[in-house]
Length: 305
Image 1 (cartoon, rainbow, N blue to C red):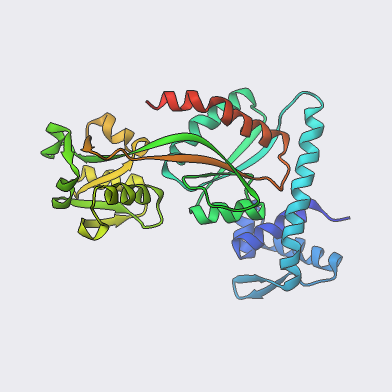
Image 2 (cartoon, rainbow, N blue to C red):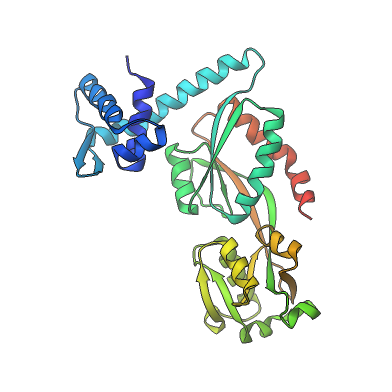
């Protein structure tokens, strides 16, 4: 009989690429991890990993086992949660992949409200790229995902649960801070801080600029930064102006360190989606979270206005 804990250790090594890193995440010593895998390899009569110094690579047999091990562990989790549900409890663990700054700001409050109703559910949030979230949903590494873009895949189902404004912010002592309104052409004269090309806020901004007959190469780009928090701080330090999520800008706006400025003719909004793999049946806890988001999205949107 396969040991589920051993399969969990196996998947951790496959994910992190080394025995020591897997042990660190699982709070196990490296010798303990090695012993568990040796036992699993003896039981299955195959080699699962090729050790190359500190790095570890899956063998062909290991690659085959990955998807089946994930499926088995998911089924075991579903059995456990179903048995608990017979006593009226909703319990278990959910992993949510998040690829957007707004998602990072939305999730803590959303999770807090959900756990007030279902305190036996543990929710883990994995912050990664949009492409990585989709890949992990497809392979079953995460239960649910937050994304600012619908990436078409036959296995995925999306629900739109939040509208996020992308706003222009300037330093508090910038001349525009007094008037709070400019025209799109005015943007060409100012040093601008942008997100990286694959970021959802940048895509929304470029679409808005194109509608105003402004191409990206016309901008005076001062720098490109990889997250909204860093951009907000850069604006506070007067390194340039920027378009960022209203959620990400909230702290700086509340403290008066940055100021929102309206751009005539530009109303930038993007949808935030919750996604799941429709081929993988939801556990009771996952289904409750999916329903909870649907039932609370209007209140969530209202709270951000």
